[in-house]
Length: 368
Image (cartoon, rainbow, N blue to C red; front, side):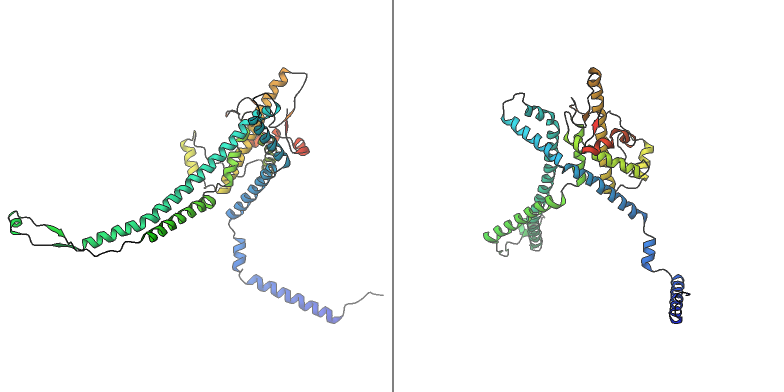
């Protein structure tokens, strides 16, 4: 009729639990906060900013690595490699393979040059470490023996009385004692074992330093990669890597209100006294900031390539009004490298240089 009523015992137990909970809350409010709570509430903003930089850097690395490891990139690279190998074997005739070879020859040459430069740099540094280690291992025993001999020789000097003939000349002679303790020279086997051990340690230092210490950072590879869209001819990296990179750059600007979240490194050219003093007072860039600025330079070079190809297409379309050409980025054959004086404002131009509708279809960008 009137519904179920809670029992008096259950009501009393609930009231007691509520009172206990209220007492716990009052006790926790009166007691001072623990050290862990203080640490969590007073975390420095620099660590949070560093975490944001690291997350942003990982997003760009993922976009670049996905583009490089894509099937389209592998197919393009295999075509260029096969055309270059066939062109080297065939007669110098105007075949399709030689045409492809000439179109991508500048980019392939720059990739090989960058790789050789990095490998030679690592090799020279590793060999220098191994050579210095060998000199140190061989020089320490020699220096020790020389010091021991000099100390022993200094303790064996003595003054002797001069002869009557020498007393007339008024001079005294300092003679070294003839008696010298016999020293046992190390055997040939011992010398050979020492030399073998020194060579082994030096070779190990060379290999370890070249593998772990002087290995180029990922930013070095991206810095070399950022110059590839500026080469003459066609560019596979401009066709495959630039569109996802520019789209990720656009999303980053939209996330941070239209501005690049990392402070740019001060340029050495044309720096005034005011700019130099401001750069000296500015905070030091971290490794993540440097890598992000290199990626920004990569996006800027991609934008230069787009503008330069667009200018070439406009000239071609002006000559041929009947057939309007629309080509993908990187497939326009440019006669010379992209000039350095191509002006690009990457933070503004990126919003209209690449169309998301075109890149969403097959991951490539088209220019008109």
